[in-house]
Length: 73
Image 1 (cartoon, one colour):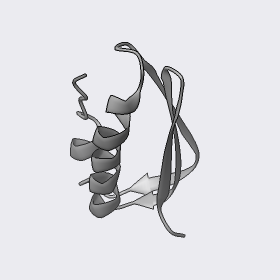
Image 2 (cartoon, rainbow, N blue to C red; image 1 turned 180 degrees about the horizontal axis):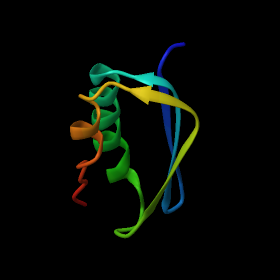
Image 3 (cartoon, rainbow, N blue to C red; image 1 turned 60 degrees about the vertical axis):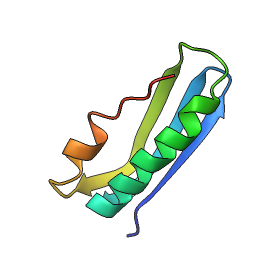
Image 4 (tube, one colour; image 1 turned 135 degrees about the vertical axis):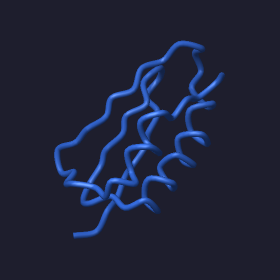
């Protein structure tokens, strides 16, 4: 199965859908996308909804990339 993610902004909420098995490369793409999308949220305070419905396991190298993502607005 391929890995995939989708990030959409709905007012003050970033809605994130995940699919498949994530590798380090997918995690790095996700980090880059979050830094691109989140500054477009109109409010200084926002929430994120992360859906793991179709997510599978990932390689150990994914966690250090995804867990500490910080976005400064």
